[in-house]
Figure 1 (cartoon, rainbow, N blue to C red):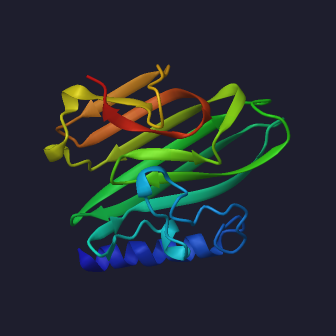
Figure 2 (figure 1 turned 90 degrees about the horizontal axis):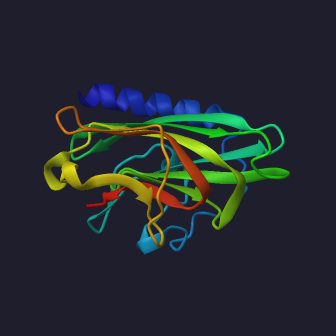
Figure 3 (figure 1 turned 60 degrees about the vertical axis):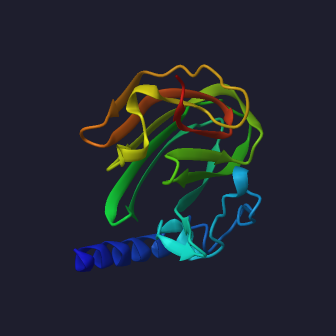
Length: 199
């Protein structure tokens, strides 16, 4: 199992390092400060942030993965990301798709999608940034440990401030298979969104 995990991580390191739009080689946003994420979450300031490697620093596990994009608002785009993370000896995987319709904003925008495997959330940065048309988010986490979660109280919501009612196409919470998934969530502005207790 360790050999497979090492092989996967080595392959991911190779793929991430060879991408043309790699923010490790061409940083465009400064999101590496400790204050970049709310509630004191830290983003790794080196290339390890793109691997989602579990690192212990004074018993503080960092499980943040970020990806940088530049999109022309007049054209729109569909961005797809998938990532695996070893959490407490078990693999947790994440897949995300962000659909940006044409004319969702004016000009070109460089932004980061920052995924938090501990809190099953995503932050779209820089904030605040409001769209002319909502963007659509599909986000799934597989291998979720429900031992500390009550599936009957969970929902997907805006996490930074007053709760907002988000429209979405589907929501799947499957405790047996360890799945948290939402599709077609209408995101009106950049901020932090994720799974939280709603009941």
